[in-house]
Image (cartoon, rainbow, N blue to C red; front, side, top):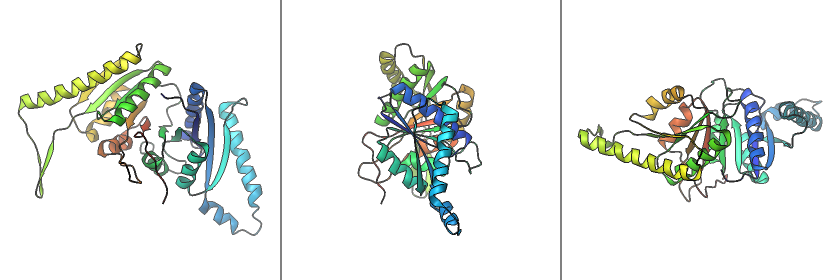
Length: 301
């Protein structure tokens, strides 16, 4: 993993964000970098209080910042070096501005916010940040409160997937974790007018396609092994759709971190994760690290 000068973590006081703070502190320590945390109060919440006659906004903000600092100290201890900031506004807009002002290299968030009840799916702010934040985004699950033991790198053999593979290998070395390189292979679909036909190639052609995917994975494993000699690497090609396979595969493999590259398009203001990445993020029950394309940026309209 390239040295990270500034790690930013979003705090909403959920169990997920508690683990996000611990992990952000661990990453900052790895890199001898700066750790920043931010809590964002939504405009709508403050607006309701402003209607009250005796509402003392400055006093409330002071108490909210004091609470944030006490929360961080309770988790990280009194000797922490985390810089705390309170913001008021639209959560996504404020988070992007905080990334910019802090010159953050990595954003760490809980996978779901305090008010979002589902334990598996990714919350709305986390989804938007994965799509559009101009930095790598790590989403922490509630159950992840210790170093990683098994990391899965999901690859489609793109340039961004190669970047993600290097990051995954670096983390695996730091945590003495096992690394699995995983590729999902599905058979081609061909649209013909209003009909979509699944191609049914001959058996030898299917085997040839699988051999190509396995060779690509083995080549990637060899490259990673050359620069991470003590790393234990496994390669797997799954002959199934991500929708059917990703949850079961991660559960069986007992992975606690999935790393993947997102896919961007130069010149557009939005990032397109791609169908496979969308499904992995939506269906994965462990923590997720989304690595952005080289040079990706996003500006609010």
